[in-house]
Amino acid sequence: MNMLALKRTLWASTLCTAAVLLAGAWPARAQTTPMTPLPFNAVSETAGATLLIPYFEVDLSNPNGRNTLFTVDKGGRLDLINGNCCNNNIATAVLAHVTIWSDLGVPVFNFNIYLTGYDVETVNMRSVLAGALPRTASAGQDPQDTISPKGPKSQDINFASCTGQLPPAALTATQVGNLTAALTGQPAPTQCAGVNHNDNVARGYVTVDVVTNCTPRNPGDPGYFSGDTTHQNHLTGQVFYVDPSNAISRAGSVVHIHSDYTGNTDPLVTTAGNYTFYSRLDGFTAVDSRQPLSTTFVARYNPGGPVNSWRVPSSAKTSLIVWRDPKVPQGFFACNTTPSWYPLGQENITAFDEQEHVQTFMSGNPFPAATQMVQVGGSALPVMFTSGYLFINLNTVVVGAVGPMSDLSVAQGWVQVIDGKFGALHHAQQLDSATFPAHFIP
Image (cartoon, rainbow, N blue to C red; front, top):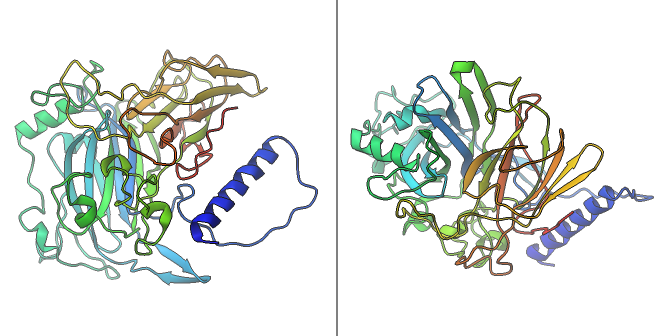
């Protein structure tokens, strides 16, 4: 049996086992067979070649208000081969390419970060939107080792392509103005990139890719996946949603997306027509070789008050951060219009309370954009129960999408929960992968 067939068999077996357990039937006897975990079934917390910060907010009207920070950590990856742990160049220095996207999936700005072998860099989105980019430099631009100092166990190398680019210059006033306009749904300078919420809050998401050079390209530009990105699964990270004015912060892991580090041999992420993370940007050719995310999630919700934010734990209802794949490339568009795919739909959203009463949402689009934060029990998602969990199936057909070839209705996404009772930020539970979508409706 080839690897693709084996993975499909194992995934189908996992779904069947889950269905048995959910139905309350426990097998009379069970046998446990040790097996090596297979990649690309669902997203794990191990280091990836791409990081996704699925949502950010910066309140531009209040310098002490809501803000988002995230870290890019060069921790490396430890791989198990035949049961033995090998050091996969864990101390290797790398370049990370940061792309800022609007809440409608438009790439609006990018920059590069250099990381020594065990480095960590914090990106403050308020500072970036004010024009101050993280200051890093490889050995060639930092011969005195004062900008990106190397520790005793780290590698420090020269990326000649970064000469003149690292350390970065401050953004001009025009660049800052266009960037903040694009992220608030305003003309930037003549066309728009996001939803205008009329609140002067910048919204969007961020991706971080390991690259070979200080590239100025965006993901999807010609040459980006074929010449700029690498398959080094060496990055980890955390995200922090903060509101200094209320002394509140929420923190959790970013999404770690893995590449086929075996040298483009895994058919799941190297076969044209299959779903990969960047599929919409490369015509579903699988040239990016990144694993796709999940399509179906379970998200716990708890009671709280009326505030749709992470700001005040005693009065904040549960909110969901939901990242969606529009499945088609999206550029700037005429203001006062919306992209052809907007709003995104879904196959099913079902709410359960703790006594298993059911509320099914048959209409509406509570998660219409590429990224958003939505209050559970609010006008967009009017859950009538006090507490319970949501079954969220984000699969949807998008007109104009050319893949995945086997199932045009598959749509990857990601769901994070800001709990209304305990104030914790955590990932919702994944029930499938876009590689093997469940299409299940309770």
